[in-house]
Length: 376
Ligand SMILES: *Cc1c(COP(=O)(O)O)cnc(C)c1O
Image (spheres, rainbow, N blue to C red):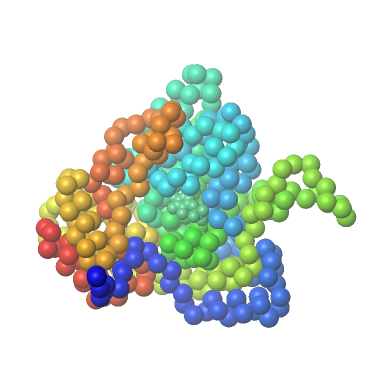
């Protein structure tokens, strides 16, 4: 019989402030147990004032739902090409296929690990030459590190292609003083259980004008026309956020800055402790960038050493994870058009995400680095 003496250290677990319960109780006490209500409205307002640009937020059931609706608001339909960062979680790309459109994957550059602007431009030109101008670009701030937004914006504008900014992992990050979530033509956020703040499950679409938000909310609420009876002129979804869960979101927004601070402190701890080992590389913040360090990631010189570290942590009941497997290497996307330079495949082979929750204790951080040091 194995006796597990140590409790598991998770990669990124929910971290409640204690304020959430009050808003959830409010929902119960007022019987707003519905996918609308005062918590939903207030949570949207919290997000709007936090992002502090002229944005209009629709709170939704998930980040994936937000991408699905965002692509529709940008006019993506069956048969369209949509450019998507290859190095990401599948949820960035899956909604493209829900609409019958085709993802075209773009590899990463080494400075931020996000979409390579040069490859992006090459891909756009190549698709235009084939008579298939892409309808939208899905760019991702992976692990909370902002993508090269100025470069991507310039290219997108010169070909008049809108950008859907996947900021699921980057709430709290800044690019040239602007908050992630305000850099695209539309942006999405996620409040899934593993993200920097959570509503257990939830997401948001961030719009630059009110009409777009209205269109998204209309689609998210079964596309009901204005009529006393149920009437529909388009196909809708049931994608709004629950008022109970939005209560959790309100409580989490009160501690967002603390959560960012704690995640960044984890990164600093790992970097301080491991910088003496030449084998371990970190991803520095480029000039003008403030990353929320949603997850601390390290690069090792080889797949073999990465696996040695990962397995040593696993034996101590410590969760760690290889970096995202690029979409162009996923069996489900093997036949998609892709523009590849080898960067993301290399990162996938050599990289590891370390436990990064804002609720990690100093003792836990100490025991994690101790295991890594013992391997090195
Ligand atoms: C989590 C995540 C999503 C999806 O968000 P959900 O709320 O889980 O649906 C999309 N893109 C990226 C990069 C993510 O990390």
